[in-house]
Amino acid sequence: MIQISTDILKAKEILENENLVAIPTETVYGLAGNIYSEKAINLIFKTKNRPFNNPLIVHIHSKELLENIAQEVPEKAKKLAEAFWPGSLTLVLKKKENIPHNITAGKETVAVRVPNHPLTLELLKQLDFPLAAPSANPFGSISPTTSKHVVDYFTDTIEMVLDGGNCKNGIESTIVGFENEKAILYRLGSISVEDIESIIGPIQIVNKNDSSPNAPGMLSRHYAPNTKTILSENIEYEIKNYPTSKIGVLLFQDLKINDQNIEKEILSKNGSLKEATSNLYAAMHRLDKKGLDLIITEKFPENDLGKSINDRLERATKK
Ligand code: TXA
Ligand code: MG
Image (cartoon, rainbow, N blue to C red; front, side):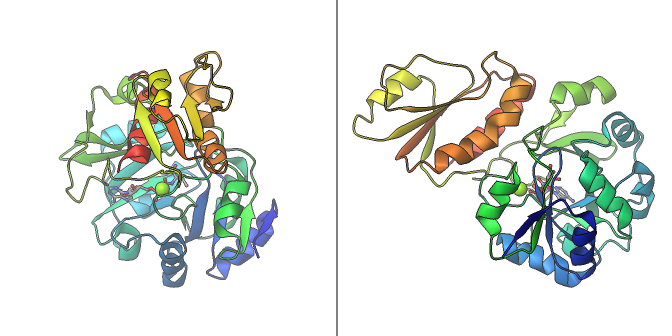
């Protein structure tokens, strides 16, 4: 039975015993294990039901530790780390030899970040190994942004969630890699493309239909509620197509809907994309637990964090 606790020493002990702890970060909760323990890493894949060809992110407490993880750090990567760490940026770099292949799914590159959450930073400082941590959800489901979400997924399968409250950014880190010194954005996330470009200039976003090993399946179905979910250009019109269904709508800002029976989730009353991002997954979790027949959502503005939200909604609604 999982325990919800703020006890860092307890978390440390479990991790040192090669078991797993769900940890808070500023993006989403992660399912963490010692990167050097084959047992812990296998447990991560097993607990999440995650395919072994999907590599994990290594979490460290300081950018000074990067030299233990990566062989080469391009100039642009240094600038990004300087600007955003601790924070929601993951760098994909050429791995050091001692980074186990089960972390990187056999690749010669490793994904690494310094998360920005006081409890997890303190935990990492007390451990003498980094933590591999994918989002703490079964493969394909909505990522957790509260300890309660983690408990709902893994009550009987993990020992502890380190309770760090609500994740304030609310979606996963932005992933940037390098191909021949050229920066490539592999996953849209908590840091907008505009903010990345303000540090290193124009960046190519990985082609959504690219299924090459470097592109982690940008558009494969993921972040999906169990309830059928669709994207619509005109929510009021769409609702009329389902006269007998119990419907929930996920909205950027408020929209007047005459039907009283519709469950509404409004992500930001005053139209802030940052606030909407922070509320996105929690609202999806709430709608998913209401026993609805259908969730309808809309396209967000295609700029700033709106791009990242649209990426998640497109994947959540992909058949
Ligand atoms: O915000 C986050 O990044 C959260 C928190 C817990 O840190 N973690 C997270 O992990 O989102 P996960 O495993 O759910 O997503 C990691 C992504 C996957 O899409 C994976 O394919 C990609 O990172 N990735 C990992 N290593 C990679 C590599 N060497 N090259 C390309 N993509 C990589
Ligand atoms: Mg994930």
